[in-house]
Image (cartoon, rainbow, N blue to C red; front, side):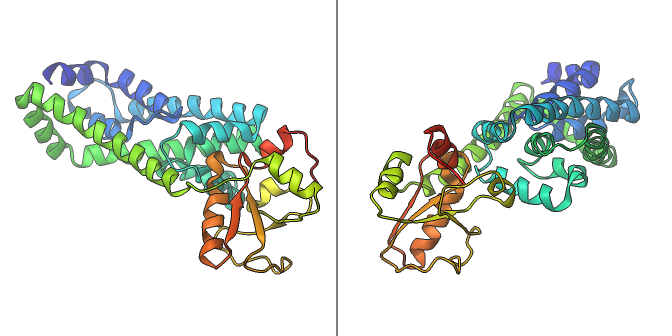
Amino acid sequence: MHYLLHLIDQYGLTLVFFNVLIEQLGTPLPSYPTLVITGALLVRNSYSAPLLLFVAVFAALIADVVWYHAGKRYGRKVMSVLCRISLSPDSCVRQTEQVYLRWGAPSLMVAKFIPGFASIASALAGALGTRRLKFVFFDSVGAALWAGSAIYLGSLFSTTIDDLLNVLEHLGTWGLLLIGAALFAFVAKKWWQRRRFLKSLCMARISVDELYQLLQQGAAPAIIDVRSALSRDESRIPGAVTMQLKGPLPPDLDITHDAEVIVYCACPNEASSAQVAKHLMKLGYSRVRPLAGGIDAWIAAGYSVE
């Protein structure tokens, strides 16, 4: 434990830089506690609060610009990849779209305070064509507010944090194990939440080939598109009607409770369509299935869209 504190004392700025960088790139290693601790140790280190803030903002900006350009080049595919590697629930892409479409680039000023929002918001900004200077400005302000609040909290409670670090230092190896256990518990909790979320989505799916055959045979199942307004602007499966998450059945879709209903989205694990399918089942519709792979699988199979 003494060695770890020595590293923080000697290489605090380097530690902050790489911790912030890898977190903003998508790994579940929280850097906020690191900023709080280094903020508390400012009085016994050679660097100043402005320098610490600059290093944290610079690291965050590097990661966010990477995601911005990835989103600009690859579009929505990048956001799907982010949700697949993230420990946050798969609905994060849709939630981020809703927030960003409502508030635009200024939403980046609070992005880092919202779990699962920052990286996806950066990629979404690129995908939507937000001007680079505008993105950099609001993202820098957001990073400064986020890092600055952590550094301020550390300096504000420096005595308490210093006492806690002294206790951990006296514990030696046990103190280091306590820190490792806390980090493991954080990651395990996130993983368990995601696992429970994915388990709640377990239900029968219909493949794009099966749906195509039904349409060719004239079975004409009801098809519901539950993507965000941004995604629906691109294309849709012929005959599909739109519906909001947990909203009422679309008024232009007059079907009986035993009619076949197919729900699709454009998110990993068909998260949104599975949620809507379960919602419709609770309303009494017994033959509801999400489309496996969503609109992306439909397009990849070469089937027509409107």
